[in-house]
Image (cartoon, rainbow, N blue to C red; front, side):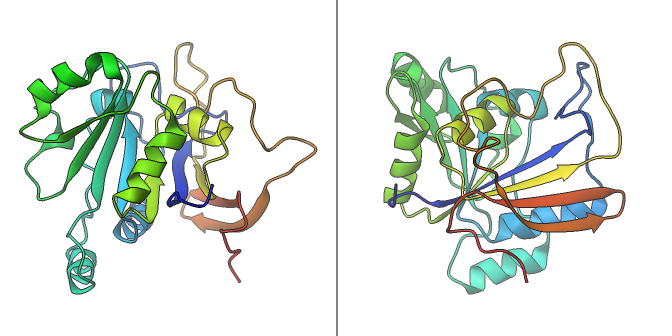
Amino acid sequence: MADRPYTLLSCSMSIDGYIDGAKETRLLLSNDLDFDRVDEVRAGVDAILVGATTVRNDNPRLLVRDPARRRARLDRGLTEHPVKVTVTQRGRLDPSQRFFADDGSRKLVYAGSRVAGALDDRLGRVSEVVDAGDPVRMADLVGDLHARGVRRLMVEGGGAVHTQFLADDLVDELQLVVAPFFVGEPGARRFVGEGHFPWHPGRRAVLAETRQLGDVVLLRYALSDRCAPTD
């Protein structure tokens, strides 16, 4: 599929593959060095996508934090922050969530057809709501983003979104950070769910880079020929 953005999927997980605990308090899997690395990656993309569950549970801002990186984006003729994108089938989104804050970023909500109209009534003043069909297909979504000028897309979760993007072979690069501990809690969320993935024992992903960042490690996998290994 040529007419889609270069897509990198970014995730932090525990040694046993969890991206969050079972409690309401958010589990921090990264450290300051990696938070800064992620900020640098965000500064280099056109859009950041998370699922509606991540918007509800983590209440993320999805902004470029470093002022120098924001200025550099402006110098390149871009907005200070990438476009913020979320996707929902059930429409459980609230305009008070930080995703929708008046921070100068453009927001896009891809919604299932059954909830798109009601969502537009609720969110139309803070975000553009796109009727994305029923069910929402990630291949159609990224095609629409490409048509809107998005050339580099960063996907930051959660597990259901990871699973769909990977199973549909829509990811060029996987940036996976492993934290030095286990979670092992019933009901905790995993990196991916069940699915038929293009990478398996007969088709191994290419490890393009490893990097230690304090007590975590970054594993960067090339999942398409559009991703170049690091020298």
